[in-house]
Length: 330
Image 1: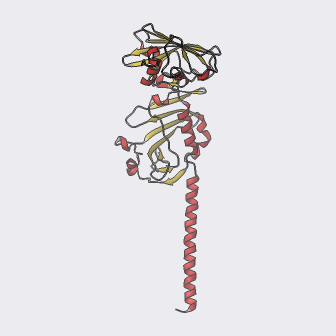
Image 2 (image 1 turned 135 degrees about the horizontal axis):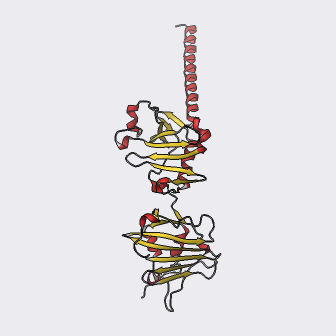
Image 3 (image 1 turned 180 degrees about the horizontal axis):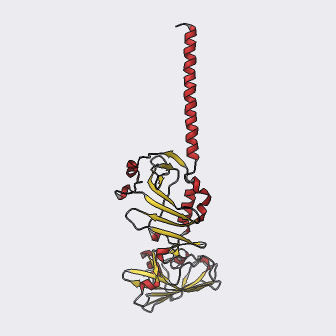
């Protein structure tokens, strides 16, 4: 082969390489465009008009959340207020979800990805239905987490095309997880006094002389008695600084047959007051709030027409008696 032929071959090879690189670059640009595209591009403009959503985990009853004015409620729980955080996180994730990669469009593979319409529960998708004001309903299918980094496998109902998105849509799938579980969220430093009346007649009163005093004193202590440690009584009061219920039910549905095992009255330095009673039903304890006044917005969110089941640790803290707070005799 002569010199001219060799040069021609080199030029052809270079052109082939350049052509291949150009094709690759073009494919990468198209892929990047897909990766940057919102998953719910058509719905971006009206996600904020969401009026209700339904979540159905395979094998479990569907859960429905509805908007009522400026609040969200759980209709199956007598319109009890819904927690704000799960809904806010869901809407954020739906707005920010971007398509990373197109996966299979063959429905026969959906079961392996947790996106099937039927079959074994482990193969079926979590169904999410979004209902809007003035716009069509949106039915989504949520599948397995992505094996390639963060994200999840998803598709639209009626569309076999599976996409990997860059968001993980972790949804509560039972009604209890959607409830606003706050009962009280009272600033500990504003509480002046907590009075507890046990059904057996024993009384326990915890108090502070002023707001600058940190630890609560026990008024029933006699000379010679001492607390097990300086802040032994504080835990009974801090319970009301972040009191979350374990379960809740309308008061009329429970119908307590016995007198409460404990009555309480909490008061603050600025005239706040709150009453309540603790009932025992079988091996469970339920708190019922009475009248309250003077608290800031959000400090008392529990309702007097509902009963709130407390967990074992909460009951243990609330029902302590004087002997439980005192230092052990040598």
